[in-house]
Image 1 (cartoon, helix red, strand yellow):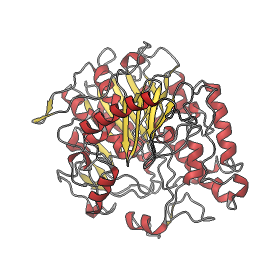
Image 2 (image 1 turned 30 degrees about the vertical axis):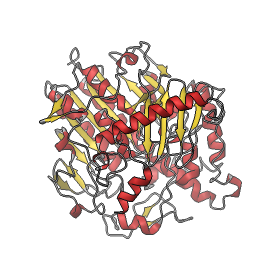
Image 3 (image 1 turned 180 degrees about the vertical axis):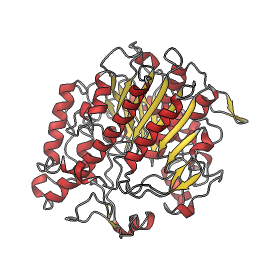
Length: 527
């Protein structure tokens, strides 16, 4: 297959911030990802949809989340754009590539197939048309979890295709399992003569903070200087790497984050960030095994690997009672899981269930402001790497804005396939994304159309150098992204014509995609 269509591996991290990998300024050890970047392309203005399942819906379909059926999350609130699972008038990358002769596989998280009361295996039903699983949407093989998050040591429910299974082995860890299953899928696929599409969909480093003690130990003490020092160090490194323009000032520390000197439980805070770093480190180790498998089989040269994150760093603070109601309450050995961010209860082992909270998320998103949920840069900017030895000549940095909606178009383009007009008897919505294949070939490339966002009333438009953005329920803000990508100087009052032009673009898009006012969505959810 060296001269045929490429294999495609799409790797998605979960809740990982813009500066959380080494080649984007981090102190976290990610040698495999860094090596991919050293022989590939780093995109500096790649964007997601600010939240896990909307991003996944857009990435898989080449449509905006509302068009794909996941306008908010995976709960069904009634209208088709908010049904909470993939619509039948869209097609997934797996379905489109499978029709073109590809073998299709997914290892890891799904999270675009509806919602259940809790992550209890008894609540999930195979064959429910309103709760589709990956094999229902074009994947030949799947290992993973249908839900959004859960224990790394005891993920539930866990599936292999349509079969409910249990974690195996005394040292089971979900990130390792996702990586190892992916490598095995590659080995099986290489026995045939079809190219393959593999989606590796991690939950790392999404909460809970779970990692092996040996991985954590490499980072304990590394964060004892606090989040302010970490933000400064990462910002300087990003500037030195050419990812940022040095004229962009780092955003101020979030007003909700105290200065490090005022923090009493510093040892606990250091441990929280150390576990988070260990989760990313372990993911990189697994990606290393996936790349090694490609090399072992002699198929690395004509395999396109894309790596990115589904949203920015997550500032969510887990409260005991709410999370206990949602998650599996015991370890595999029957020990009680202690839920919530309790200072001095050190996270990491299977009996804890914690998050790393807003101040560390502020550091993850260096130099930007805000987080997952919001559509300012901290919520939507993702590191993104493309690696394809046959096509990409060497290390490069690309500053053109791209979006997850562009991945479908790009995958079909590199495979030499066309986007279908219908699938499974249903007429398909037109593709929204644009192929950035020219950028992979080293050619100049820019999107022709603006990029748009809406999530929980947070709205944005990116059109060339201009970004129009609003944090719900606030007013529109306007930023010149060439001069001020860290969004510190609002130009809305001084450039009303540009604001009005972009507001009209947003209104047309929202009407076309079925975007509802957030107050109306909240009312539907209550009823």
